Length: 346
Image (tube, rainbow, N blue to C red; front, side, top):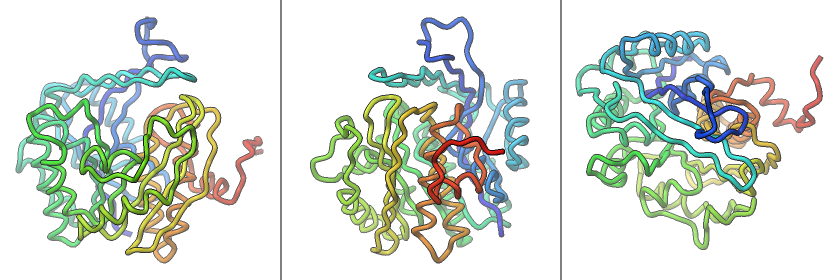
């Protein structure tokens, strides 16, 4: 099987330990985080060859980042060195009625200051079958948006499947263009699109009737999102598969989780997972995306199984600290088969 390529920014993640607030901390847990890197790590875990494309400064923090990616068998041969800084994400993990909070310090990062023409996309895609990007990248800067479009157009020309996670981040769109203005042209080049229960509304104004993500109380009507899939696929006619992750938030520690997938007008629904003790939900959507790409590449004639694999994998992510979903294919399949007991494996 040919490789998957992902493109985006990876950041230094500094997290408050033990449910502390950032104002209480005297030290922070240091890891790395980035939507497209998270997808790359998941794919590598499942045995898919993957190259991650980004731009990083030439300093020890970036060196450690590359070492960490290599430790997960993610290809980094096309990572570009340049720019002044790696972006930083500060995380405060919520509990019960107090939500988690994320603060960004990523202005003028190495990827945000990238320029057109510095990446040879045709060379990178020469042995690739799939290209994945997210809406976070074009939110960083107009330059990053242009490079993302450059990659999508090259992939389209080479008949490579293109996927997008809409991943709307209101706190990032600050360079004078709205998400809708930029994202429309980019998403037009995508074969597979995913979003959460709010993304399509926040970016494109497409939403289900009578839905408020802040008032789910753990109950999300999957059927209501069939119309969202229809509207998105009618608007973006290249799209062949549309998927939506559905989170029911009871509190910060207790969520329900499921998904819906539309393939050429046929709908598939997953089971509902009741996640009563969330360890870390950051990266949950990325773990779904990585597992969905794996499922679509592996279970080519079974979209239900591809969806089920993605939802089970991302359910397991909620039990793992850090952005990466460090689970095996066997662990995901065990959960798919109904083994959610948590019994010790000997």
